[in-house]
Image (cartoon, rainbow, N blue to C red; front, top):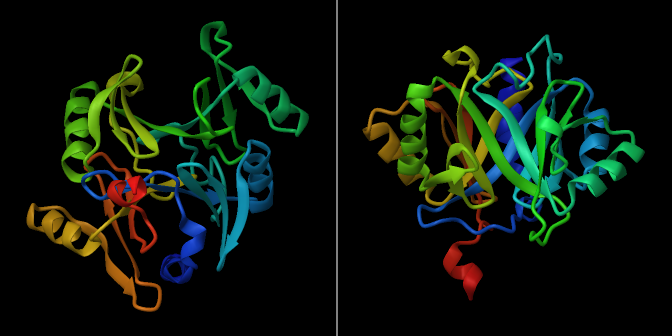
Length: 279
């Protein structure tokens, strides 16, 4: 299995650049949101759910991907599904989130397409949840002002309460995430995504994402090799070393944050900067 995954990660460097285009330019640190990588028991079933929710299915090399504004959802054929690999609940990334202009209209449309939708908490009509058969929990929230029918909104981390300020500071220091709040949650913003940090149930550490249904999250990073040198010099561990494909001028590497979130870092030649996007 490890050998197969290694081959898949290397193959991702061969994917045509056009498949990776994101609508959100990188921040001052050269970072933008990239992708969520799922271990799927049934790729076609998961693809059907995400397409019904408004994503666009694309085939890039050996990868099945569903593209949303702000994020790409990879549907990798995993070794099983929850509870075999474990759902997102119980891991450091408890769930991910999208926003839609009208939650109730979206729910009606998705239910008609066969998507199972769970109600929001405390009778809220601006919130809902979708949980895939493999155990990925997805929160849906309403943003009447957004220009897309659906877009990525947040990644929700569950950690011990005392670790929340440290996690916020870590993502700010390494990825330029802007500290703030999302509702009651301590948070930090990156282009295309909000990182929300909340107290885990029983205030205990959660298991790593690696090997779960949401195996890793991904960021696109400008000057990745320089980033990794700084990271390593500061004592950071690189799980998978910098690997470049000369034909596409793309590169990748993997790290794990101090709380167990497995992170893929990608450098793509087509990722726009805030400066070029404004021209």
